[in-house]
Structures are given as structure tokens and as C-alpha cells.
Length: 262
Ligand code: T3D
Image 1 (cartoon, helix red, strand yellow):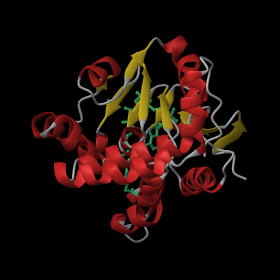
Image 2: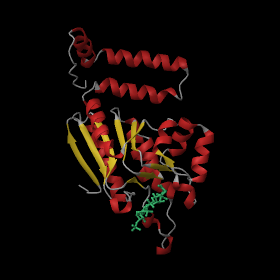
Image 3: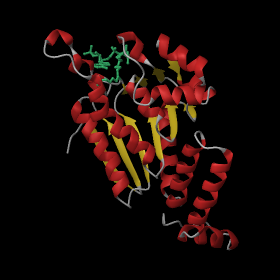
Image 4: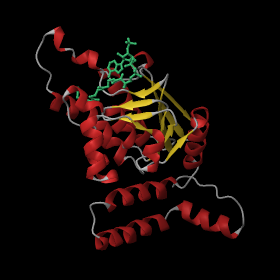
């Protein structure tokens, strides 16, 4: 097990904490593999019913560790298409495909691929002091880790282009006002709020929450007709779950539902 990502599982919440604080939690290959293993575990284990992703120290994640890309060290020019395929994209795909809620607590600056991994999560809370930076254009690269997709979809072209072309830091409050993240919260309240949210989702009807995630993600590329059909099919599935029976029973008995996640 690598200490580049701290991993704990308690009360249904798998906490994944990026842990290279001296480098603002930027990605080296070891951290990539550790983070991917964390999300893979979330997919494989029934005991995991929500994921909480955050970082240690004053930053969330500064994207690629540029020390590992130093042209002055000589050697062949790295094939960045290949590094995206091997290291970033599998994790992005895992996060989006995981049918369990992924909460991201952005504790400080989120730059480059670090910003875009946060934006791939389902519910993003950010400390008021945090900033999102599409740092790529400062070093001659293009937005990756799904950023060109999520920025354009969520914000539309004008704001997506301005952020990507200028690399202007976007404060957490503006990100929330623009609908890019769920909420900006006071720095000292961030982890308490993110933990409470993760715990409450982990105690929820996991199967139904997973289907909800799938449905909402499909909406942008579906016609209304296709989406209505999908709602029909997934509601049929949700309606057969033990948690649905428990939810209705608990409502009628005027008590709190005890969901099992199935
Ligand atoms: O390569 C591929 O596989 C393709 C994929 C690319 C994906 C990408 O993410 S490309 C974009 C890479 N990231 C960046 O370009 C961001 C670089 N960092 C910054 O611009 C700034 O550090 C921040 C704006 C994020 C924060 O600024 P500030 O002033 O708060 O902190 P700082 O002093 O710049 O950084 C603190 C330390 O972290 C510093 O180390 P030191 O001087 O104390 O020893 C700095 O060098 C280090 N650090 C920050 N970001 C990175 C980093 N070290 C390596 N790689 C980094 N990305």
C-alpha cells in the first residue's frame, strides 16, 4: 500500500486523501495507481457506499507533477497521449462509472488535472479559499482529465474558453455561483460538512442513488424520448429493491428508514 493516498473505510464511507502535500498533491505514477486502486475498491466492495476524496496540506491537487516532466533531464520527449491513456483516463472513467456517490472536498488549490478530477466527482464542496485553475495553457498544454468536456457542458463555451485560455484562477464562490460545484463553505467547516454529507449518502439507498447517477449522466446526450424510456427502466429496477420497500414502509410507520444499500 502506498502512502501517496491515505485510505480508510468507516461507516460505509471510503475516504481517499491525496497525500503529497510538499508538491501540492500533484500526480506521480505511484499516486495515480493508488488513487485508481481506491476507486476500484469502491466499485468492488459492497461495504463501500460512498467515497470522500480530499487532499492533505494546503492544496487539493496541482495536477501532473511537472518534476517528472523536466525536459532539462534529457531523455525522450514523453508521449502525453499515452500518459493520459495509462494514468488519468482510467481513473476518470472509474469515477463516472462508479454507481455510488463520490463527494469531493476541495481543501485548497485545484490546478490542471487536479481541478478536473474534482469536477468529475458527483458532489463538490470547496473551501472558500480554494481556487480552480485550468493551468494547462500556462505550459502549452490543453485541458485534459475530462476538463474540456465538463467545463463546456456545465459552463458553456464562453466561460469554458476564457478559463482554459487564460488559466485565470476561479475562486470557489464563483465556481459555486456558476454551477460548477455544489457549494463553497468556510474553510474550517469544509471537512465537517463533507463528512456529514458522505455519511448521510452512505446510509442511503445505494442502488437507487447509483441508478440516479447513471440517469443524470445520460441526460446530456439523450433525447427526451430516450431519457423517458431510461427513467422507466431504471425506476422498474429501483422499484424492485429492498430499500424501496423499506423506504415506503418507514414512511408509513413514521420512522427513519434503515437502508441496506440493496
Ligand atoms: O504530463 C502528462 O501526463 C499530461 C497530463 C497533464 C495534466 C496536468 O495536470 S498539466 C498541469 C500541471 N499543473 C500545473 O501546471 C500547475 C503547477 N502549479 C502551479 O501553477 C502552482 O503551484 C499553483 C497555482 C497550483 C499553486 O501556487 P502556489 O503559489 O500556491 O504554490 P507554489 O509555491 O507554486 O507550490 C508549492 C510547492 O508545490 C512548490 O514546491 P517548493 O518550491 O516549495 O519546493 C511547487 O514547486 C510545488 N508544486 C506545485 N505544483 C506542482 C509542484 N511540483 C510539481 N508539479 C506540480 N504540478
